[in-house]
Length: 231
Image 1 (cartoon, rainbow, N blue to C red):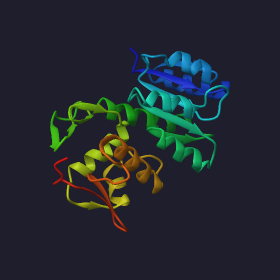
Image 2: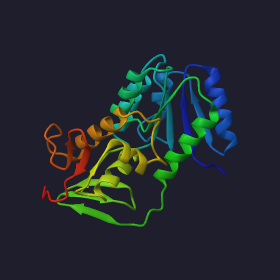
Image 3: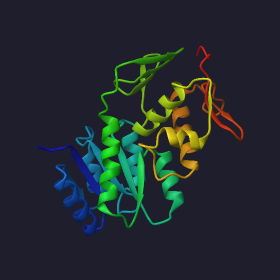
Image 4: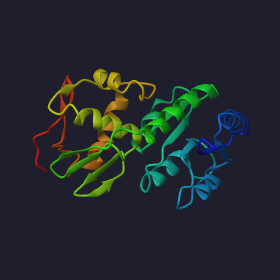
């Protein structure tokens, strides 16, 4: 029985083969794409996959291009593959909506671990409960965020980060504290990743992300979720 449908898009046959074999052994149904054009065609309009693995550098549309397009219409989890030590690629990947990144070369077991952590978050059976802060609703059971009843698209990691802040509304949380709270879910941590995700969350829930009223930056200390806002 399949554990989920995975698309691996990479122009290196060895990567597609090794990842595909390792994931198939774990019960996943794996589809490969050799370039960006094939990946875009396979994703289509309905996105018939439970998770996408996208190489940033491949012929045709890049992994970032596909990630950006998909994220505009779906919250399907996405892992991007980057060149070793290419921090700019990692940051851009997070900015366009990737849930996680992995630098080449990597061990298939590391990818498996990250993939399963993401899918666990997506399929979490967290007790159904909706947190409401003015116009903002955070549906813990469905893992959805709404403003005035309209669903806003954020990644599974960003949802976990927003929830961690909202459940501790009024408390200032440092980057280290946030990463510790999400240690079962965090990326290969470097401080800026938290800032990037906060920026994406603000873009989704704030009227003016450049002048946030809900998630505030406390210089030198971290972030605080403002619980008393009525907007």
